[in-house]
Image (cartoon, rainbow, N blue to C red; front, side):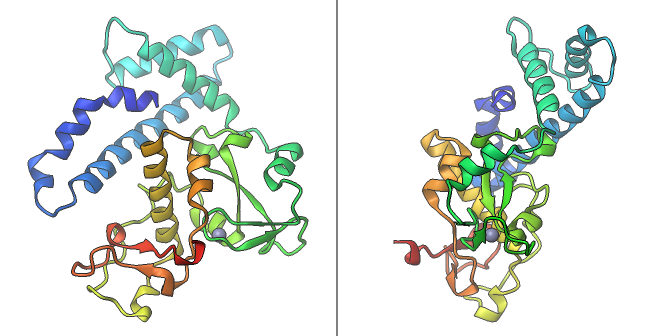
Amino acid sequence: MLIKELIEERVYGAIRSSAILELGGRADDMGDHLLGITALNLLARLIKKAERVLEVEDASLHHGLLVQYLQETIGIARQGDDLIDRIARTTLIAAKNSKQPINRSIKNKIRDRRAEVPCYLCGTMCTHKSSDTTSGIKYEHIWPASYGGESIFENLLPACHYCNESKDDMLLWHTGAIFSAVLKPDPSEEEIKSIGRREKIARRIQEIVLKASATGCSLREAALALGPANFAPTNIKAINTADAVDFFNFTFDSEEQT
Ligand SMILES: [Zn+2]
């Protein structure tokens, strides 16, 4: 949120109306992508820097060292507000908390005493206490732990082994190899099969992010409100049937959930 504040509304407007995005009919999607990868790169570097700063023995120096990094390397030179202080403080807290393991009571709360829970991304049922690693519940950080995501109830959802493994350290949808497949308009089911799970997950996460920002709720609440998507090739549809099918031009048919 602080990084969003840093990037400011006027930058959003300027990017979306830039000449390079006028062509292609994707100004919103491509603008979001550009802003997203910029913000995520910034966040990733901040967290790594904070982890290094935390190694300095004298804790009273931590805040100042990060503020200096923000001013000199990142180039934030805003005066007259406390934004730099707030970013430094929040990043240090995130870097400290992000590597905490998930405790059992949080896992139980997420499972809500059920023996089986659906994967929040694809709907596959996952079993509590399964000795089979592929059918057991994975507790997934919605915001990845390596980027400051905490092991708290609000940042965790149950996922299946395959989604958890495919998502890996994908940061939201922006880093999900989203330009790897482009299919002909009106693709056959066989062609649709070439859309990988990682792209489907990235697409679903994008839908979750859009819902969260449209309604002002958390990513977790948005994911639960949307429910899992059916990842089967027969359930994937083009949005604009006249156009080639790429990352921005497919969605999951939600018939089965209604
Ligand atoms: Zn899944």
